[in-house]
Image (cartoon, rainbow, N blue to C red; front, top):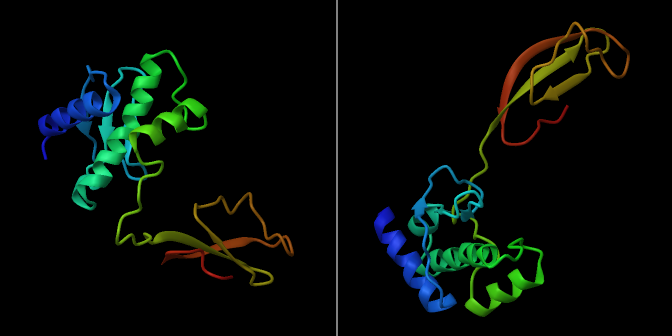
Length: 160
């Protein structure tokens, strides 16, 4: 599906479900990772995660579009389009939009880099996500000097 096809789909859904025209731009944004779509307050454009089309069925894509159109139409009507408002929840239920975007079907957690530091005095191990300045930081147990050992690649923090 191209951006032009998405634009026509959004315009059609807006007229059918909301009875109002969609007068701005709708486009795919591949940088969206944790959300199904985004309504931009600044320019009133919609951005849709392309994975909602490639990894899920058409019903999910339409549900995400309806969700973003709820933000769009409420905001243009001068109301708050925030998720927690009763108006948003009611409109979303009326049009049959999705409250949350579904998770990818084969989501695998990405491994991270963990920095291993060891106390020179008591051999206590510390795993940190970021590098630390060993001239300033000391061991929490014995106040000994810390030494960087190695980088460990793991999905979760390794056990000390």
